[in-house]
Each structure stands twice: as C-alpha cells, then as structure tokens.
Length: 229
Ligand code: PGA
Image 1 (tube, helix red, strand yellow):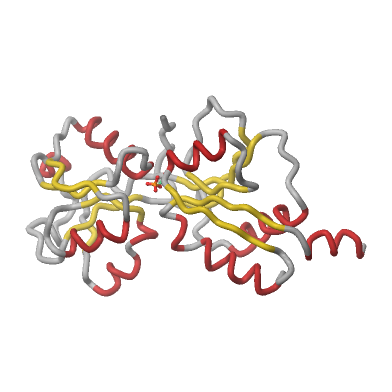
Image 2: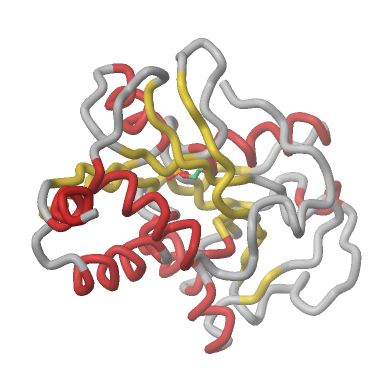
C-alpha cells in the first residue's frame, strides 16, 4: 500500500534516551535514517529524572529508559538488559580477586553519578541493602567523566556495562568480581498510554526491536529487577 509507505517515508520522530543508552541506540538510529532519509529525527539524552519529567509533559514520541515508576500511565516494552558493573583502575588491590565480599567495599572512595540518575539509585539501593557505607569522593553527571576519574585512581564506580566496553577491552579499567554484581537493570521503550504513535515512530520502534543486539531483555537476567522510585 503506497500511501502507508509514504506515511513512513516522511514525518518526524522525537526521541529521548538515557545517558547509558547513547552507547547503542544512536548507531541504530543512524542506520534507520540512512534507509529513511525523509524522516526527521531529534533526540534528547538525559538521566532518569529528566526523562521522567519529559514523559510527564508528553514531549517525546518514544523514550528509552529504565523501569518507569507505576504512578505514570505508560506503555513500557522491555528492550534490552542494562547490567551495572563495578569498575576500578587496573592497579587496584581488589583487581583480579574472585567473588569479593561486598563488605570489603566498606569505606572505599567512590565516584558517583548525580542524584536523579538511575545508575546512582540502583547502586545506592545495593549498598543500603548490604549495610555498606562507601565514601563518596566525587559526584559527576557524566559516565564519560566518571570513567576518566576512576582510571586516574580517584575511586571505584558503578556504571552501566554498556558505557565501559571500550575501556575494559583496552585495559584502562577493570571490572571487579564483587558478589551481587552485575546489578540487573533493564531498558524499556516507553510512551504515554493512549498516545497514537505516528507511522514514522512505529517504524523506528520496529527497527529498534529488529536490529537490537542479541543480548535481549530477560535472556541474561539472574534475578528479578527491583522496582524504581
Ligand atoms: P541514568 O541511566 O543513570 O543516566 O539515569 C541509567 C538507568 O536509569 O538505568
């Protein structure tokens, strides 16, 4: 049907994605745009708090974020796993040790994401559940900057595994084998309930699910994901 096809070949899509999603989805978006050059796309990158505010105001067509809170009426479809790992500089005393007891993190300096970050929320919940008080050394609203300060020896950090693929491969950072890690989070494609998605937005959503990496939501989860604030 030609008219349906034309509907997909034009139009615009407004996306909002998490800071941790920007390591994977923009590449998929690039390929989608190459195949659909007539579709205009805009994309906001922000933390959990920003995406929740944008959702409440219905500013975007599609949002890719962690577990949304239940008080908003949203459609949310599981998209991919987002494991959080504990990273350290390669010369850290805990590097290379097996099955580290989380209690050994007590009092160690950490570089933290800003409040409003889902990464921060999940790591704080883990430390609280374990009764561990880490030492907040520095707070940064950037995964990139955190990686650099950790590599520079300022402390440890909990980050999405998606953000540290290159640094782990290059040996600039190491992943610590602490019991309870990785912390299981998940990404969802989210939009307000009752919203009518445009043909362009639906086409992109289909593209996302068809072209996502083989690590699909649920296939690697060791345990249930805890609900979010
Ligand atoms: P954020 O994203 O830390 O940038 O908020 C991670 C998440 O919410 O899973």
